[in-house]
Image (cartoon, rainbow, N blue to C red):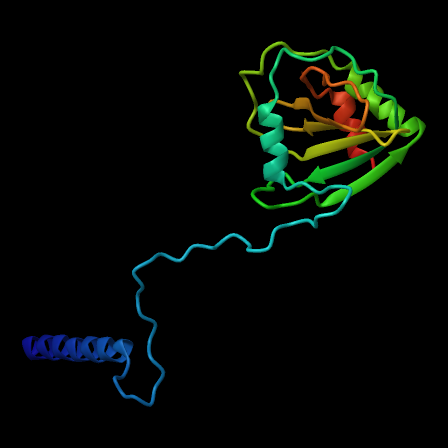
Length: 198
């Protein structure tokens, strides 16, 4: 009797398993919605098609243009201290994850003594003869500092608050302005702290 009971239990278990498998496969009936089908390509989140930030007359460059200009700077060349006389500064801040066509997400301005004090911090950093070879891998914002003088001349610096902490003059615009840019240097802790204050 126990052998018959065991065979009956095994048979019932097999029937339940087959019915459960058939139910899991779904129906081929056209009235029910189709089941999800596998695709050939893996699905990965795609980056946002819209760039962050907004272009403006104060901060017109994308992060790609900013990094390209900073990469072109020749280390060990330029004047030790700039004689530029700023009366205002526009600070364009790019997000740490900015890439491609992203624009500055934060723009602030300083005038008079605040602009002069910020320029003094930039000018106080000692020039560096060679591009830093050892850089950290932390993330941080990139800043573009656009100093303006009374003659509407504009001296632009790129300051990185991460990695190699580069502080490089990228352009000097305006008629009659001296052609030699300040030498590349590294961002000081005091400058980063000052830039963080809004």
